[in-house]
Length: 161
Image (cartoon, rainbow, N blue to C red; front, side, top):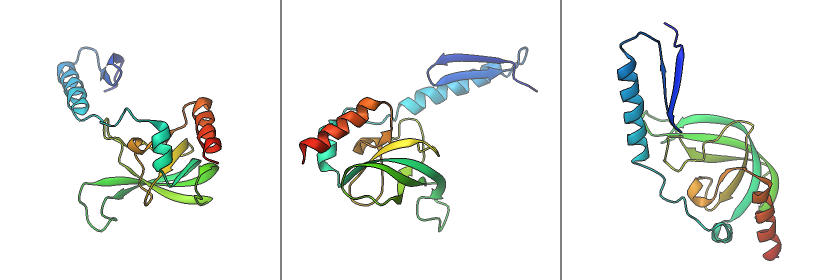
């Protein structure tokens, strides 16, 4: 059966269905229910001060993700259902610290509202590293959205010299 209709109900809620199929109501219910439950656990660190995050970080840099791998949260030894994304990157520009030219970061498996960065291969990101290599939107890490981000980080770098 091919789906021939696409309805977008809200930013993260859509329904694909086949006209004339009584399963439509079940699909709508599942999508809307999923929408409500995913937003019940939203990331609680959305309001942060970039300058404060910059000052607390050991290193801040822009990098291109060159590979991403889903790994078990306990190092792959047994299946706990707790997964992470191991992202390998190539440093493009350093704003603070001495990150390696090629390195690894560990992000939570992307799920709506869990504060993960959502690593995509070939994506350009700003990473704020503290102790270790774990990243989160809560520490300031995220995909490069605009040239203003780069300008702001350059200004932080210049003011700390």
